[in-house]
Structure formats: structure tokens, C-alpha cells
Length: 106
Image 1 (cartoon, one colour):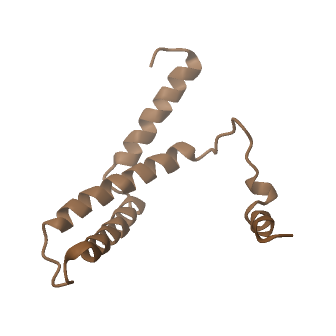
Image 2 (tube, rainbow, N blue to C red; image 1 turned 90 degrees about the horizontal axis):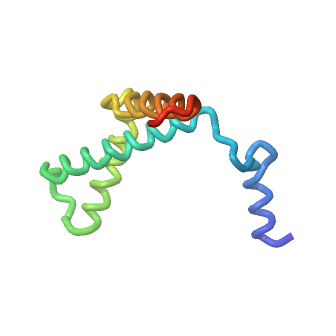
């Protein structure tokens, strides 16, 4: 067995086999939380670009570090309840899904 086959065997288990058309029950909540984390990351990154974080030498390395810091803050903020964006998105997606199941125009 070559390395590719071995890695594929380790990565795919019976529980991970995709079923076409199947949607995870928590997909809307997960997508909403990811979107909120991404949005908060961009907000925090923009705020950090205006703050003097000290002398890290400037340049691209400092920009990357600043983004990683903003990403960590954004993810943590979303995990702790965020700004309510995920909750509102989930409600909107649920309403859209209910309307689609009834056959209403969304």
C-alpha cells in the first residue's frame, strides 16, 4: 500500500462517508457561526491596524501576526456569543427553509 492509499484510509472512516444530498443537522448553525467569526475577524483586524502594538519590526511579518491575532480574537468572540450575527442568520435561514418547504415565495 502506497502512502496516498494509507493516508486516505486513515482519513476516511465509516462515519465520514459522504451521502449525496444529505445535510448535517447543525449545518445552518455551523455556517452562521463561521460567518460571524470571519466578520468579527475582519472587524478586529481593522481595529488592530489602527493601534500601535509596539515594535515588531513592521513589514509583512507583522501584518501576518496581526491577522492571526485578529483571527484568534474573532473566533473566540464568536464562540462566546459574538455580536448576534449568527443568531440572526440562523433565524433567517430557518424562516427561508420553512417557507421553501411550504412552497411560499421567499
